[in-house]
Length: 215
Image (cartoon, rainbow, N blue to C red; front, side, top):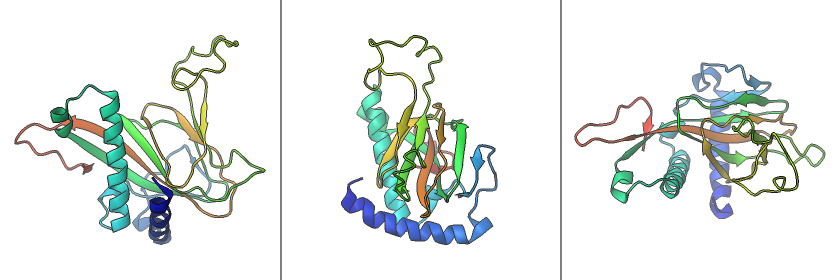
């Protein structure tokens, strides 16, 4: 998202999310996953259903970019693409000093995303603070390494991919990819929004099930 849009949106979302964090159990996800450690608040998975204007803008931004990604990578016609129903689970994370997430993927979805609201403090002495690391799903891709494959560009490269969050940056990735979040070392809260999406073809005269946000 362009900085001139991301910055004011970040201010609105930060105020809203911190208020919801302070409300405690009312907005906290009931399930505490074993991969979550330290000071990490995870909201319920209905974020994209919230009526607040900044959430609506963010939900539409994420949806538009996922739809565009799918269009670039698939052979759907425009008519077929218009009949797809995008089902979302979405939530926010507030991570404070020492919080992190162990290795995991996102089951029961085809696409996932992470939007950075506020990456928190920059830590020159801890460059890996809060960094996202994606792991190569091809088990034998790195069985041999030499000058012929050590400097391949994405997507031909292999090994891990480490990405630093930046304000307004949206990461979209296949849900099967294993990834982890390194311990956050800063003082200021680190705030991100995440989503999972599963996509179904709408049939004429049959409304989609409302088990999740549908766009």
